[in-house]
Length: 244
Image 1 (spheres, rainbow, N blue to C red):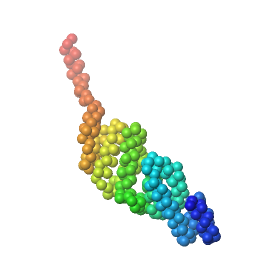
Image 2 (image 1 turned 30 degrees about the vertical axis):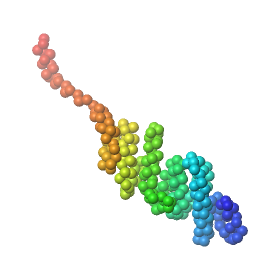
Image 3 (image 1 turned 30 degrees about the horizontal axis):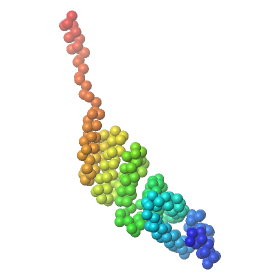
Image 4 (image 1 turned 90 degrees about the horizontal axis):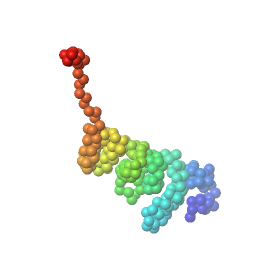
């Protein structure tokens, strides 16, 4: 049953249902009473369960992403905005966050991710990683693809790297992020910065010997050649007089 159909059926059963907000999904407004709010959220939770079950039946990853982009994300975004406006930490937000990353809506995903971190929104139950680790892994994987394609990874990769400095994340995750920071710096010919990132990445276990050596050579060759000291003017003059 569609969300609107469910609302209409509820309205028949209870004429006061959702008073002040004809549809949580359509208008993006939360019902005012606690009971109505819970009824509305319960409806969306059931709807989400149904949609997740349908996604499991699709074998093609590409087809799943197309379904999320065309139908599921647009369907739930009004709910997301309403939950955010109320300062909610509802788990539905974590699921939509995953879908946003799945369809490569990095701008939307990052905005929701920052909200979820601030409000302690949990990841979906099937995820073993917590939100900070998931975010670091996912944004690094995305940034690697962008960097390989010659596209900018900013501001999103830089935002997550800055946040990660204060997080307790596994060493291998830190190693991947720092190595990529070094590669991005090399693309910008910031050799000294690249060396710093590679050296830190190495401390966390990253294999960066080759790129680190290359960055050091680039830095060395970029240094200006030492100029030979000019002869003092007096000595040059005296030498000239002696040759006359």
